[in-house]
Image 1 (spheres, rainbow, N blue to C red):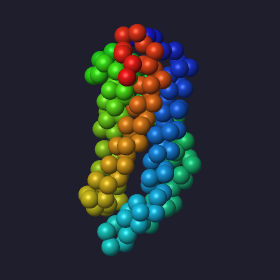
Image 2 (image 1 turned 180 degrees about the vertical axis):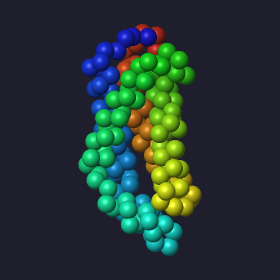
Image 3 (image 1 turned 90 degrees about the vertical axis):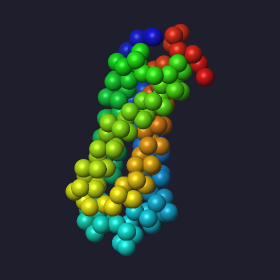
Length: 153
């Protein structure tokens, strides 16, 4: 495996986070998803009251910066991440990001704190999985693709 320098790790995290969160933003702001998540017959009143008040630009910027930590952790664990190709390593890493971050956030914040129903949690988690997979794939593409020990797709 090749060694990745801090600049390459930073770039991988920022690009992965930016594009992954772009996917999430596009999906979560789409009219069909909005109509489901903000349907007062299905959603908790507290969710409907609180979530529109969040500062989206600050939240997204924080998530993009957090992605640099994801890239650094990927570079540390890269030799032990399953998969012989950058794509498989990226998919595994995206799933790992989802399991370590989004799964717990959905449960502790949206379900237990805001009272969001489990079915709506499942919808959000499926969208968040897609964004995490995109982030993981991009991080792996940047950090693994030229490694002589990892085959190209």
